[in-house]
Amino acid sequence: MDERNKVIVKLNNKTIESASSETKEPYNWYQEQAASLDDNEEPNEFERRSTNYDTLPKKRDKTYLKRVLLTASMAIMIGIGFGFFVLKMFVQIDDTKPTISNQETSAITEEEEDSSASNQEKTTVTLESITGYVVQAGLFSTTDKADEWKDKLVASGYDAFSWETSEGFRLFVNVYATKTEGEKLANELIDANLDGYVREWTTESKSIKLNNTEGEWIQQFSTLWKDTMKKTNKEAVVEEKKKWSNWLSSAPAPLSEYSSSIKKSGEKFVELLEKNTSGYRISTQLIQLWYLYDQTD
Image (cartoon, rainbow, N blue to C red; front, side, top):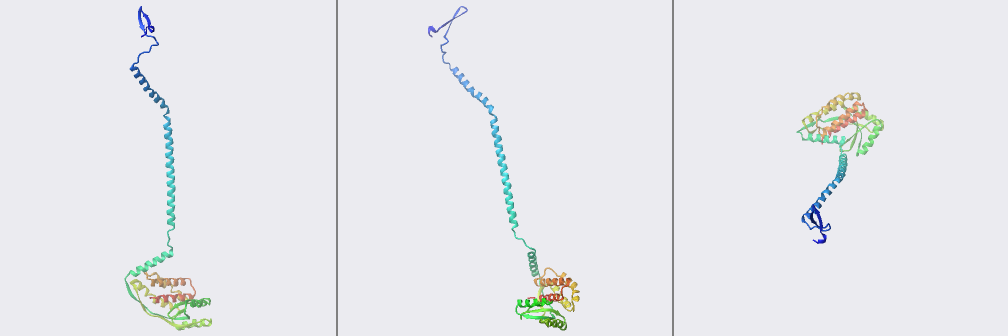
């Protein structure tokens, strides 16, 4: 140390040497270590200051939650809308499905009955022959010509049934049990400038295969029909309504196509009797029943 930089201090009359204030102290390693320790403590102070920003993450959490809820709500709304769309589409498909009308249902039922009747065990049934005296108003080669003449008869207060035969179409106005009864009407037609004459008409006995109950039922037809034909006036024929109604109600089920056609015509006949329809209209319906009874082929 320089002599000029010495400082002389007396303490209790004792002399003590001291270095100048400007003299630098020698480097000590523990001071460096202390400084480094002080430096390491600075982050702790920063960490304490950073705690003032704890509210920022919470704001971010609230925003995220809102986004999640909004996304979920939109997804639900889209799902509901799509569900309604699909439901409406299937409803429209159901609406386009074909529906079956009452007539179609009736036709299907009749076909099922015919099929059921055909599957049952059948026996041969003999149909009795029927003979009557018909008043014929003409013989025509075609249906159109027969219908044209029939219209003239209806316009004159009569009626007629077109009976198809191998010779053509015969117009029958009425049927009687005797020729004498028929001649009165034939003369009346001639006086009205309409053709008319009486002829005997017979349908031969035939055989047909039907199930037992149906065969027994149809065999009652000829007797019932003959009894009605023998009635000489409209009032007497109307009295037969109850007999026909009872016979129709006793029809077994199912019926074959042959018996069904006779049953339907019989129901129409009863309806005409109930309405007290014109005697000629009742007579032509009776002739139609006879015609159907003969159509076994």
